[in-house]
Amino acid sequence: EADSQGRILQFAVPTRREPYDEDLRRFGAQVRERMVQLTSEAERAPGDHTDILGTLDIVADEIRSSPAGESLDVTFLSDFIQDGCGFDFNTDPRLGSQGRAEALAHQECQQHVSRPAAVNLGLLRSRDLARLSNQRRRNIQQFWKSCMEARGLTPELHIDGMSLLKSR
Image 1 (cartoon, rainbow, N blue to C red):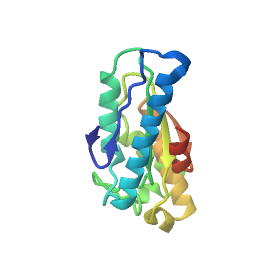
Image 2 (cartoon, one colour):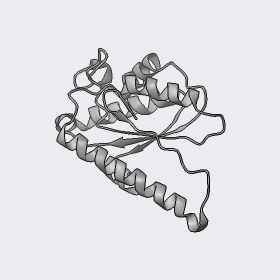
Image 3 (spheres, rainbow, N blue to C red):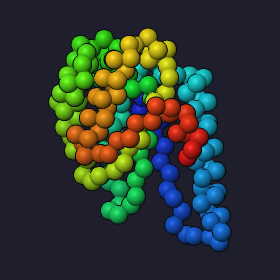
Image 4 (tube, rainbow, N blue to C red):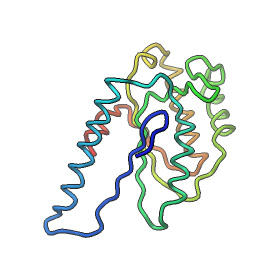
C-alpha cells in the first residue's frame, strides 16, 4: 500500500492452492474487508484534490515492474474530476466537448504502459460531480477512457463504483 493523493492497494492472488478453493475464499474476504475499510476512510475524510494523472503514473510504474505473465486487475474509484497538477476539470474549457476531451487525453496521456492491462474505472458520486452538467460528466468520462487507451490500457467504465467494490 502506498500513499499518493488517494490510496493504492496491491493484492496478490494466492499461488499455493488449497482444497475446495479455501485459499481463494480467504483471499476474497481479505480484499473485501480492506475495500470496506478504504471506503469508510474515504467517506470520513475525503481528499481535497484528485490527481488521477499522478496516480496513473504510479500505476504504470507498478505494471512495468510486475513479473511478466502476471495477471493484473487495476481499479480506480473516484469522481474522476482531476483538480491537481495544473488541471481543474470542473472548469477547464478543454473538456467542453467530447472531441476536445479526447484531444486533451491524447496530449496528456502519451506515456505508454509497457504491457496491456484491464482497468476498471469505478465512478463515485461526489458533491463536485453533482454540480456538473451531464455533458461535462460525459466529457470527463470520455477523457479518462481515451487517456487509458492512449496508454495502452483497456478501460471499462462502471457508473456505480460502489457496486463494483461490492462485487469484488
